[in-house]
Image (cartoon, rainbow, N blue to C red):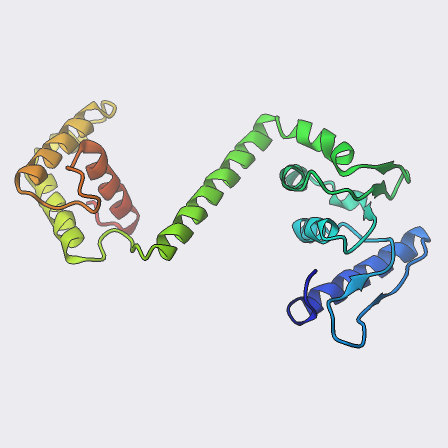
Length: 231
């Protein structure tokens, strides 16, 4: 259950949406209430509107048995929401709450209702969107884990600053034609290997203690590039 103190405004907004939607389709709406002891709000009525921006929250509310029926408005069926709904549905596939389509009145399970949308997600456009969402999730997870572990971005201590400055110097020493030619990644990899060899000979430390390689040099340069430091 969600507490009144943290979700009061959200529940009031949802209640107003539910009331307007129920009046629109002529359905009977029971009231939402707080009890006298300031306990979490409970949905007493059988109707909950699937608001597009609150899909995940409403799924969570349904999974916590805060409502006993979900009514889906056709306005929720937009392209971007099909994929998001299908992904949310996979997360909460075990929810035992009936879904009622507002237009037809047909009652379906959650999985039956979203099955066409999950199938549509196999289309190339949806696959691309899903891949971006997965990569974004992986990125945010890595950032959170780094923050929890106390790790800072590369270049925040003296050793990493030394490595960055030495890589810049070695890049300036290497022949410029190696950086101007566009013959695939072979020439650049050869240059990265040369930089890595010099760093290992000079015993420039790495963050993990693993010797420098063309990949670690490329990773450092890639991190510097958005800030204009890899000139």
